[in-house]
Length: 444
Image (cartoon, rainbow, N blue to C red; front, side, top):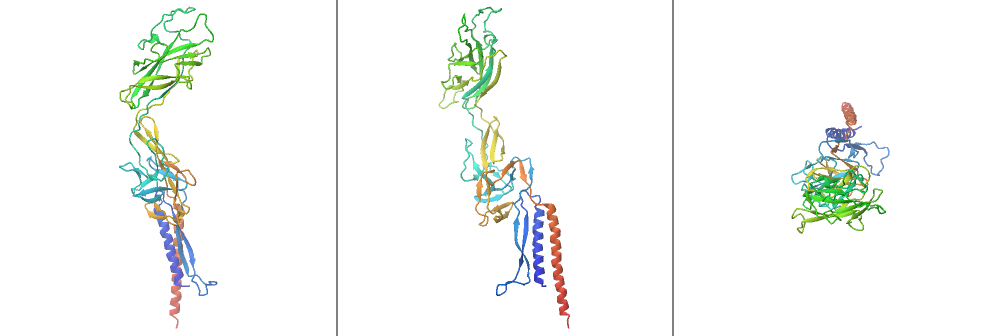
C-alpha cells in the first residue's frame, strides 16, 4: 500500500463532492442539468506492456457527464416563459454568437426582441405582414407591436327565415279572397311599410365601420287563379348608415328580390351575383372618401342569401356575418406547442408573429457549458439540428411555464454521504500507510 492510491482516492472523492455540491446548489436553477462524476482505475504500464498481476495505483475522474433528462414543468404568470417538454435546446444569439439553453425564462427588451436575463436573443422563423413564416435560416425573434391592418368587407352571409304568414304591407283587414291591397311605398321611417329587418356592420378599406340595415317586404304576386308553380317573393331594401341605397332590384330602390317555392325554399335571387352564385346579389355600399385606392365612393359587396327560407314561423336570423374588420392593436400573444407565436388583437383577430425553433445534437454531452444556463457547440457534440418543435426528435413547448432543474435532491444528499465515507476511507488508507512507515523507521 502506498500514498499514491489513497491520494488519488482523496482527489476523486473531493471532485465528486464538488459535483454533488454544484448539483445541490442548482436545485432551483431553471433548466439546469445535473452532473455525474465518472471514475476510472489507474495502472502503470510495464516495459513489456503487460499489466497482469500488477497492483493499481489508484483512481481518477474520467469525466463529469451532465444528465440531460427531463425536468418537471412548472407554470408561471409570465406569458413569455416557455418550457421544453422533450428533446432540444433553445437557440440563442448574442451579436451573432450562437448558444443553446434549456432555460425558457424570457422577456421583451425595448426593441421588442425576446431575450433572456443575459440579453441573448431567442431565434426562430419570422413572419411577414401576411403572417407567412420565413422557414429558411433562423433569426432573432422580434415581436411587431404595430396595429394590424383593416380588411375591407367583400361578403355578407345572411341565413334567415322569413315568416310566410306575414301579410303584404297595405293588406286591408279583414282579409278577403282575393285580398284587397292598397299599395304602400317603402319608407325606412315607417315600420308598416316592411315586414322584417336586420342589420350588420361592414368595413371599408380604412377600417371605418358602416351599418348596413336590410328590410324585407312581402310582395303580392299571386295571380287569380294562381299559376303553378307558386312563387312567393320578397323585396329587399337596404340602408347604409341610415341612408337608403338605390339598388337594381325589381322594385324601385330595392337591392334584390327573393323568390321562394311552395316548400319555403329559396328559388331565385334577382338580380343574382353571377351564374356560379345564384343565391347571392351585389350590394353597392357607399364608403368614406379616401377609403379606397384609387379614391372611390362605393364598394361592391357580395350579399349571399344561401340557406334562407320562408316557413310558417317567426322571422329569425340564424347567421349574419361578414368578412371585414377594423384595425386592431396587439393585446397579447402566446406560444403554441409547435412554437408558433400567435398575437391576439383588440379587433378580435389573431395573426402569426413568429415561430420558435429548437436545436438538437447527436451527442448533447459533447456540448461545452459556458455558464448562465447556456452551452456552445463543439466538434464532439456534432452540428446543431435545427427545426420547429414537435418535429423529429424535438420536443413540444409549453407557454407560461418553465422547466425545473432535474437535480434529485434526495439522491444527491445520499450521494454526498457516500462520497464523504469514501473520502474518509481513503484518508484512513493514508493514515495506515503512515503508521506502517513509522514502524519501519523505528526498526533497529
